[in-house]
Image 1 (cartoon, protein in one colour):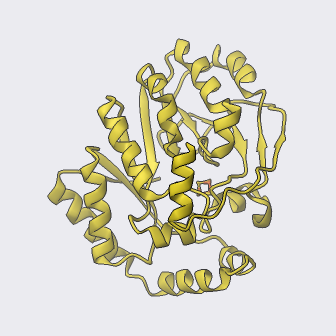
Image 2 (cartoon, rainbow, N blue to C red):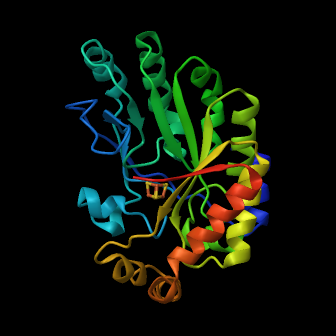
Length: 278
Ligand code: SF4
């Protein structure tokens, strides 16, 4: 992020970036098998995530305490371990299946970037998912790789993004990144996931319009599936009670079928393919 971007985000009410707490950890296996459809292997340069989305499933899947999710651990030796493992493996590599590979730590540590450089000579497809426009830094590398680049955009509303994704770049930055990826010839898509029950029909249609406006040809849609303990954990954050109440109530009363139907219909109208996630 440039100083100007940082200044603009501060002007827009963004939280100041937290002082990163990053510990190094060693890598035992670089490419464990992935259980996600369409992916053969998982590649995760980081444990924990500075984007700090309130609805994040990953702490519950990885059994890390939610309150310590933003304490990032970096696998700084991952590129070297990956280089050895790549020799014997073929298949689609899911980059960032658990945590965001372009969270702020990556700007300084370049682990994701160094992994991509290892993968390129092996011609293995990579499927990456992020909420950060930092992915644009590696656009030239993605040009040399097969696969796809996904940007998660859950809403175009800044208020929702600030409240529920406090450490992630604002939606307009992600949309701009999608546009630039498409212009750069990358197979890029938008993930609407989780589909927040806080959206109404107008929000849903505006979201599809904004995604379609980037030039992408497809979006992936994933329904919100709160994990046990998630709302309680939200309530323990400073000021988190209101956010938890708001989201939990919306979840209990949401007609997800109708919300998904608005998205699908608008996608059809805009000529964008809509596929279900996982
Ligand atoms: S970007 Fe993804 S991994 Fe990071 S906090 Fe948000 S949902 Fe979790």
